[in-house]
Image (cartoon, rainbow, N blue to C red; front, side):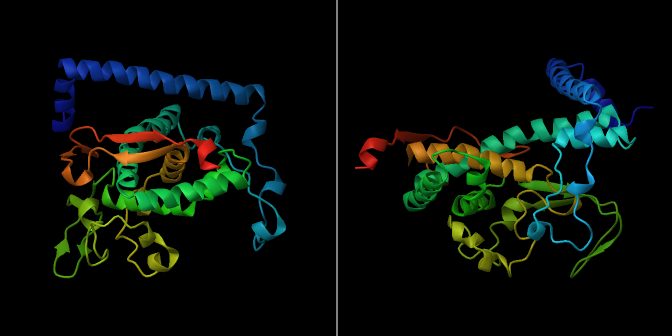
Length: 303
């Protein structure tokens, strides 16, 4: 007997859209499986040398790793998964699912977030100028090169991205099923109940965010974060089921925004207050958000 959801999935696979989805998923899974196979072959040819940690890579208990200059060896995500599979902790299918999630679940969310961030910077020239000054200063100190070190050293841009995600979280709604009864202030949520959490609404709750519609990156200054409820801001969810790619996503967005703001003045064409939103799996505008990119003449800027 087919379960209802399984039955619906089987019916969907017979529709033109379902057949197209099946074709696309086959391409996606084939790409992922090829990458995994190539990496496993590399480790086989190198006798798993790069999957092993030496004793010198791990600080002993009680040591201050930063103080004594020892850093724990870091594996790339795929290498970490392959190492786990060699210990019998994961199957090849488990690896593929993790890689698919990391690589493909994040592209649409990140792209949509970038649209909102660039639109907000275009609408707020003073904030955009401050971001540009921070980027230009960091570039001067870094030999005019965009490096990982530079991306990590852009605190104001980091706050701008966080504030944009507060106003327009890519994933605006999540659900959970509690494993046991949860007692709230005035009622009990029974175990097994579907619970939906609206991040869009929580991020604009005036009890936590004064003047919530205002784009203000300084809400994320350390002294303002300190006393704020930890779950009043959850663009990447929270707890053990939070987004595994949040740091990667933040670096992706910085890597895109920094060179754009360095090389272009952003001017608004469409204003976000007039943009109609679509309630989809992710929060997205119904139509395009247009921003004008005006090239910065570096020669004149240095005169």
